[in-house]
Image 1 (cartoon, chains in turn green, cyan):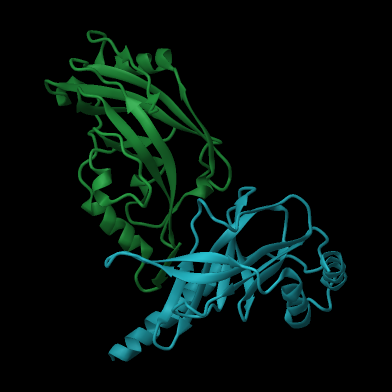
Image 2: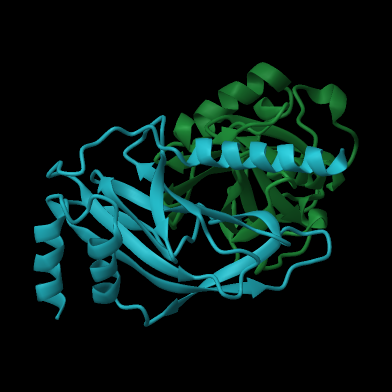
Length: 196
Length: 183
């Protein structure tokens, strides 16, 4: 819960924090942006029930850049985020639009999804929903393209998450992948695994 | 000049806050589908007392999710809420030295989350404001600690006696019935 003087607007704070974070894993649409020792990580984030339009209220100049966007915090080492994520926790994040397949460039080493953040409100106040993490992305050295699955988050109207499942939607995703990246390099299936 | 600018800003902020809090929901106090939702917050340790509050309807979906709550000496309540899911959204108030303050509740992990399945009287609880540690450049943080006093019965009596229009409405019998039940 936050207390603030009204004149210090939440919108400014949110934008200032956003501006300080390091770069996200770059979205790619073809091989031209992918170098040696890099792999394309392909996956999807879904909410059950889906995000309703009125659940997200972004009153900022660049409001479109927050819409349905989940910031997945990622790191080479698994850690548990007990508190509000620090700005540095967003370095190397995956920016995943809900219900859309993401294609991001990454090193060809395994990494971990530590958790996710979705902005629910910027303007009247600032409010976020935090998604659970603890998922391993099993990329192997030499991988060029890896399908990690659809992460399906089940929640109630108060944003309590009750279940997280990894869904194998390879066939549909592979068709999308082939349209963007061609058929020369196959998309290897390596579904996310929960960290024990 | 500077003082005048601050006055204007404060008034604008106040107007904006009031505008946001105003629900735009037109319901009759005697509507049998209304629920009474209420609670109390002790703001002795907060920068300001509260003069306005709002509760957010999170289900069913609506374009106007914020409902204005009546506030009186720490009590906050609405006697107009239809069935649905709600949680406190914000409080606000001002102090001579502290200025205008707004206290925001999270959408996730909100301890005041409430599902109203059928019309009735719902007590969110009595709370005490507690300032939490925050960094130098962070927004101030607070928590709401649940306390035993005032009790549901004490607050209902106050709402009945002091609440605007409550005594002369259908709520009188419903509150009295509830008071008998929890005696």
